[in-house]
Amino acid sequence: MAPEWILFTLGVALVFGKLGDHLMERFELPGVLGEILMGMILGNLIYFGLIRPEYLTLHSDETFEFLARLGIIFLLFLGGLDTDVEMLKKTGAVATVSTIMGVFVPLILGYLGLKLMGYPSREAFAGGVLLTATSIGITVRVMMDLGVLRSDVGAASLSA
Image 1: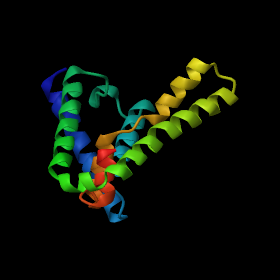
Image 2: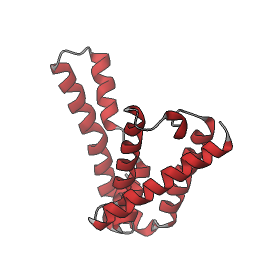
Image 3: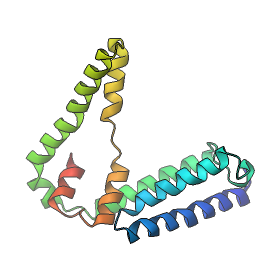
Image 4: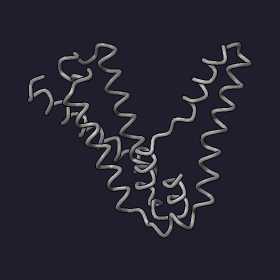
């Protein structure tokens, strides 16, 4: 892909992402919700033919894959900088229970629910596993936006 299209796409994403961030913060919501919402809006404008795809290239490209990974690395690094190790030690038991509940409860309920709907065991297990997936990147960003990353809740969430 040509460098000017990469820069154009990044510029549009940054402008609309910041706009969504600003709008959500006016409603006292995490800015990441606005960024996700703007991404959904832009993606659907292309899908419904309101914007020609060549003006906003969204297909998988090595450059975008690299930039996405780099962004996640920076986000997690910033989350690590804001983490208090002593707070993590204090929340060990809560984090352990939170991890167990956050993994096993969705896994078991997803499995049982899909089995009751008639799915084979293998597919029901895969569905249960999908329900346990969490994104630490989004969690860190929301906690940073809300200012709770250095709290007991933030430490328990990160150590879980």
